[in-house]
Amino acid sequence: MNALWVTLVVVLALALVLRWRRPTWYWMTFGVTFATIRVLIRYRSVMDACGLTVPASRWRLALARVASRIAPEARSPRILRLRPTSTGLVLRLKLRPGQDAFDFSASSDRLRHSFALHNVVSREIRSSVVELRMTGYDVLKRVRMPAVPDEPLRVPVALREDGQVHHRDYRQVPHALNVGATKSGESVYQRTLVSGLASQNVALVGIDCKNGVELSPMARRFTALADNPDVAAELLAALVQYMGRVYQVIRAEQRISIDLPDAEITADIWDLPAHLRPVPVVLLVDEVAELALAAGKAEEARRDQIVTDLVRLAQLGRAAGIHLEICGQRFGSELGKGITMLRAQLTGRTAHRVNDETSANMAFGDISPDAVLAAVQIDKDRPGTAVAGDSSGGWSRIRAPHTTLRQAVNTCNAQAHRTPSIPELEPFRPALPVRVLVGKVQPKTASAPAF
Image 1 (cartoon, helix red, strand yellow):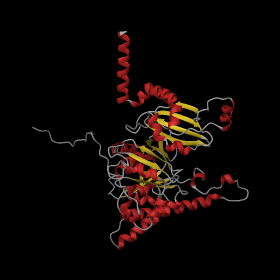
Image 2 (spheres, one colour):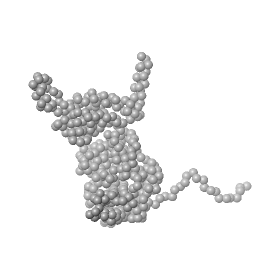
Image 3 (spheres, helix red, strand yellow):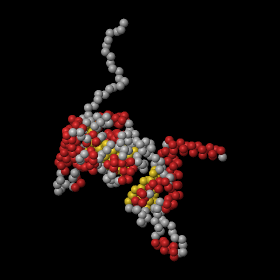
Image 4 (cartoon, helix red, strand yellow):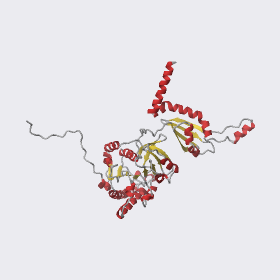
């Protein structure tokens, strides 16, 4: 009997230690079993309490009256599958007639409390089928990115609150906006993105008007880099010129004729032959407000030209393989003419912690009011946490792993051989500092022996 008590105490102590230090291990060893039993036992009562049931059908009620039986209970959605994952449970439900997928999305917070889980996210798989992704612990507390296969222009940059990996997919979302206050994790997100792109065959072009303090350490992997608005204006003009040359290549290789199959006709670089396909370009703007501010007539002319070129790249760049990643603390109409037109072209939206609701409205006001509220509620003690969405209205909380500047620089230096050369951007190639060999003994010159 004593041995049994000792074993139970040891198991309980192990569970508490795992829950504190290794929540993933705790979930896989203990939590998933308890949560599965809890969900199955409470399922019917929770559905009824949350108003996610429907009355029995008329024929069942009529049959009960004829047979003088008790009226049948309200019917809950049918469970199609309950699958455990490394972060939680996935519950797939078949809706009853008269139910709506929106009801489950609106009840996600009540379901979270009822099932005693950390988070519940609802999404519609297909007509009459809803999937509830439930996480058993706070996956954003200590972000650990799982190993995922590399795909062209698809970079894993963060972890979502439902345990899935959040990708920055430039083929699906060509241009994006990233806003966030100081110390919100916006720069860390950008480093993670650059580190992920460094290992791919892509040309990185940077504009960092903070004298290059954010992007210049990673300059070995950048094809072009500008560290002030004057050089940025010239760089954007050169990038527009390069875009025109790419379109000439596409026109020359369309080869439209009656005998040519439709599958071989192209309107962008992706269907060009591999030996003719230009390298994709990702333009990263670190602080867009520095490009849009003007203090005089000369600066106003430069600012108008910069915004015009950015709008032109956003409107026409996708087919030429040019993608924009615009970052800033604010991105509103107060930055001047043309800014709202540029924002309308930025499909992807990411908002880190902001200082006011207006800044969140600049990112999500035209997409989803719920995303605005979620962005305002980000805790300052959780740097790197953000709300990511797109123009479709869908959004989720994410958190990027903490990537130090040293880690990003090491990655870019290791992948420096992948840096392509573009003739139009060659004048803006960053000047690299001379490497200093540490620890190497320099040869000594011959000297007269000492007496």
